[in-house]
Amino acid sequence: MRLIFIVLAVLFSLTYPFLVYVGVQHFSPVFFAAVLALIALLKFFAVKDKKDLLQISLLLVVIAFSLVLAVTNNELLLRLYPVIISLMLALTFASSLRQPENILLRTARLAGKKISAYAPQYTRVLTLVWALILLANAAVALYLALFASFAQWAFYCGFLSYVIFALFFGGELLYRRHYISKHQAMTHSVVEKAS
Picture 1 (cartoon, rainbow, N blue to C red):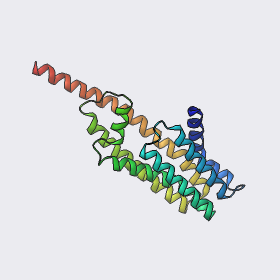
Picture 2 (picture 1 turned 90 degrees about the vertical axis):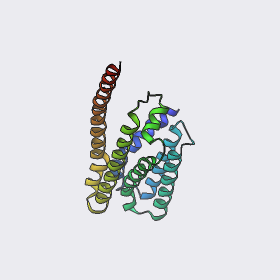
Picture 3 (picture 1 turned 120 degrees about the vertical axis):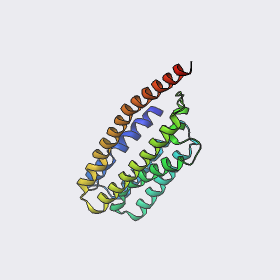
Picture 4 (picture 1 turned 135 degrees about the horizontal axis):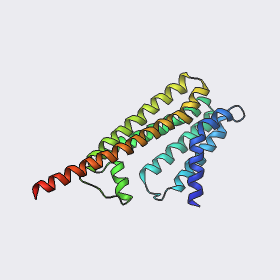
């Protein structure tokens, strides 16, 4: 059942801008308010840790947004949803930098990954970079929501932004392999000199 929730939540989230673009001609914003609330609930039930503050915060923000959307029935608000989600995620990443463990380090630890001595600094920088990328994404999505055509907004929020995230994620994975091998070689060299 959890897998079904995950699949449905991912499908709805990825296709949201195109569903709005196509559906706004046939459905009112109230309909999309219900869809967004459903997506938020699916995402929440798909996560393992129901007490996770991030998941609870996202659920509450989306439910509140859905209620405002349902009451106002405002078409512009439909376009602001990606802005709100990006801002929430950027805030989550940025605020984790003030904690003993940033969100990426904590996630790696919870996943059972081996934490090396240089991982805290690396994940700290990466967490900051993700926060900035998400903030930039929110700014672009806001500009497009306010000043661009519906088609341009849907293209960026429903396709191009995902391509940008995927390219950054792929590039970071490649760089991480290089970074790890470089530090392992340096550690190995130091150990050999010490002995």
